[in-house]
Amino acid sequence: MDKTVLPVQEVRFGDTRDLPIEMAFHRIGQLRCSGQSSIVPVLESCAALKEAGFQESRYYVIDPDGVGAGVQQFEVFCDMTSHPSTAITVVGHDSEKRIRVAPCERPGCYSRKIKYDAELIQLNALAHVSESCEQYVKLDCRHIRFIQAGWGWWTSWDGRKMFYWGGATSNSGHCACGMTDSCSAPGILCNCDSNDHIWRTDEGILRDKLSLPIQAVYFGDTKDAPLEMAFHTIGKLMCKGKDGTQNYQSL
Image 1 (spheres, helix red, strand yellow):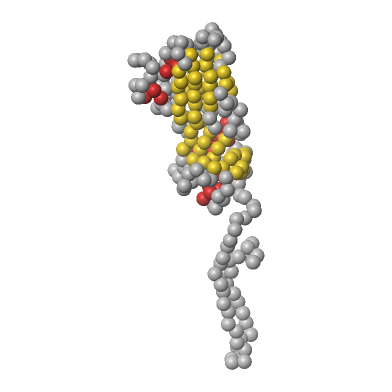
Image 2: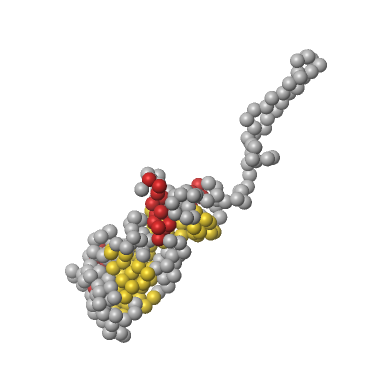
């Protein structure tokens, strides 16, 4: 029952030469393992932990580039049940609630830097070893200018300005409604570029895992409150599955 020495590799006996007085018979049973070890290994993601047999949704410690190499290990929440064949690695932050954009006038004059439960380089390493990652974003607005006018944007994990919003193709300059020609007015690529007195919303999922997680969001044109106002909501970083084509150490 000592699992540190199992399975049996071979057996050896002796003192059976003088037949039929000296005789022996042996029988070796099947190797049988049960339960889950109380010692949880540090693997690269929740998907790897589920693949290794860990099925409980809870907090685990992961290390995307391997223990002792590159980025430090960190704690995440593993959703082991929402997807039938893999797990979702979930990382929260301090800006998940609906937050009002402080009044200011210039393009990008308001900024909200997002503080995650891990360092940005750790989360980018997680994105590299995952099959896919996503983050939900939403902007509720009235009488402001946004992405099409160059007054609002978000930055990637490494600080690059991103002029598109959730639900749109990467670097398209669009919001979700702009991709389907369903924005509030003809020629408008984001509802929040309407710059009128009606409350409008742009929302959707960002899916470019090489840009995620969001480092910060920037907005402007909210100085004349209460006429000009905006509220932003940023979702958790959620990474699913394993990237079978590369690992973080090779990048």
